[in-house]
Amino acid sequence: MYRAARFWIFILAITTLATPSRAADEPSLARVPTTHTHRRECQCGTARCECGTWLVQQTENFTIYCAGDHADARRLPSVCEALRSRLQENWLSAAAAGWDPKCIVVVHRTAKGYTARLGRGSEGSSGCASLESEGGRVVARRIDLRGDADDWLTAAFPHELTHIVLADRFGGRQPPRWVDEGIAILAEPETKQLQRLRAFEAAEARRQIYSARELMAPAADRDARRRDAFYWQSASLVAHLVEQGTSEQFLTFVDALMRDGTEHALRQVYEIPSLAQLESRWRPQTLPGDRPESSLADHIAQITSARRLRD
Ligand SMILES: [Zn+2]
Figure 1 (cartoon, helix red, strand yellow):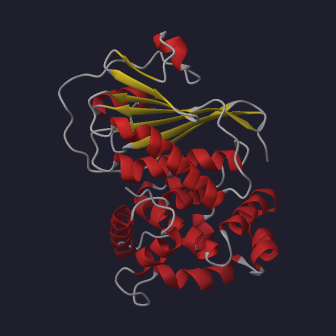
Figure 2 (figure 1 turned 30 degrees about the horizontal axis):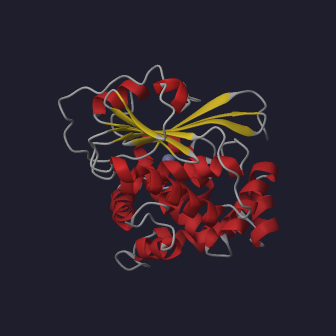
């Protein structure tokens, strides 16, 4: 169902062991509006300029804020555009229009700046996507990243940008959490996926995992004890269904699921008669004994081999 009213979605996604924060504070971006335009902010109107210690770079679809001396600062414009194109090719069947408004990307120099922006509860994450939608259209896009985390560019950024790209496909509606997070994890590098697999195996040993029915239920992600299982099993279930056909078919399934419910969507799109049948087909992939050491990671890596940020 579409929500006509304006709403915000905050997605805190990646938990990462970060390198220690640098001592220096970063300038405040608290006054930067979500629909900020570069010209209004810095008054110079150039495509690239230094506003205080912030390097502000414009591309066709992004406004990027980064400390000017950050090692990855100068390659961010090309990385942002290339990854957006790749994700859209993978998941959107129709050619996507340019983003208006552009997506704001803020690479915070320190954990302090990042948590000051995102508030309590953000300390354990290294990336956050924020969306605002109105009348079935996305009217604001923003990604905040911890530039002092060791995987912010290779793992956190692809994950968060996937959420932003998917929002276009669903007209600003938030898809089910297992879909949103599962697809985003498929954009992560294999090293990160292996970390998630290990965390899942620990949850599995504690018997804190999900059935398909539980995973697909609303608010399934709010069980803190099963958080690791939620992320890995979401990716596993998305990968399993994508493998039955195409990514486009999977998103058609998600449309049907949001409209008609899970069992109806399974019959309609995959000719799977029931959730119990899905459970029996998918479940063995998340149980010990039936899989080699890293087969799920390999499985996801095969599907996503063309979808990763390379560089
Ligand atoms: Zn996420």
